[in-house]
Length: 81
Image (cartoon, rainbow, N blue to C red):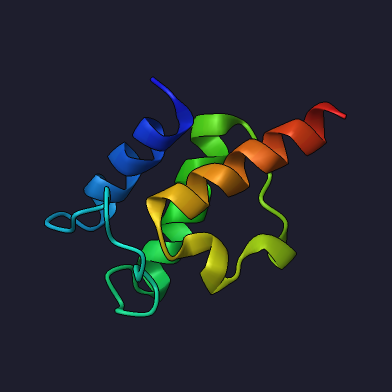
């Protein structure tokens, strides 16, 4: 399973009924609320064995599954050095 598929799987558990393939307004349209956001960060950190820095927790990184996958991949690369 690639990063995007894993991210979508996590999102589907937190907010069922949203088309995560195409939605680009997860935060803006409140498909993911503040409590789900905390769970999302924790789930992403666990699934990918990364630590998401606070500076990365901005709407632009969390508004779509694609943006989340890109952020995860970027953090994984940075952590590898």
